[in-house]
Length: 342
View 1 (spheres, rainbow, N blue to C red):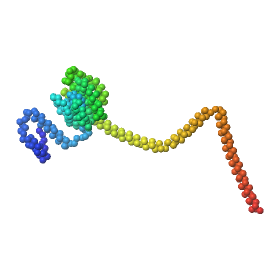
View 2: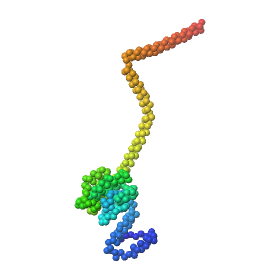
View 3: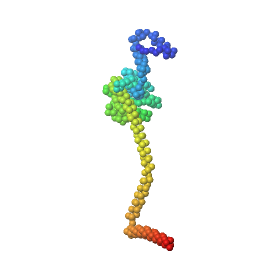
């Protein structure tokens, strides 16, 4: 039924176990269902390990998913039924359990690491220990129990937003078979129904990537739940990569803009100051002229005219002075010539 390791790689306890396995007459137990089931599990485990040795897992084709919700809503049944194909008959409250299941998504293998958590308040402090590395969260409530529905809004969504902010969420309504048959939840005395519309509204409210109603007992929509989980994980990775590219581009643009504005800013301030100064002076002059009376305006014009005439008079006197000085020099030259001729 299974492959045994070589003796050289085994310890004393393992060698004794090997001897025991080899010494058992397995034909005697062909009709023992428990023995056959155990051997099948061993065979499956060994084959999985052999496949892992031959081909390493692609990190892009695996994801960690965590399920949360009130106790007894069907979280464990959701995982176990999906992973094993069998619905668990007995209810055993979960503390922490994790399962690994290989499935196929878009014609390629995909490995799901599924983490089951306890919904009871006694484990509120321990539960966050299972959150690191989570890529998708499944929030479960019972479709025939209103308090579990309200707990999504009041407890589970706030907790996930606190510890796993930004992680994709899938909202799942369980026990669909009980709602279809209008069966009362075992913990209640009356039938309480959550409609599809109410579930969809809550999904929008908490920002869930998808809302699905399922029944692990009948298997209805069970595969769809985990298809949505895988799709959400892959979409999230794609958005993160795209966001990183956008951030890099925007940071480059900002740095180039800041450099350009800095260089332009060094040149412009002086021009701005002078223009502001001129604008201020001209506006002050306009204001003063507007407030002048007619007499003050005439007086201002008269003074301007006198100043202009005085300026012209100075320039003319300078010209006369320069002309007389030139005449004197010319007379001196002539007198010198006469004396030399004599």
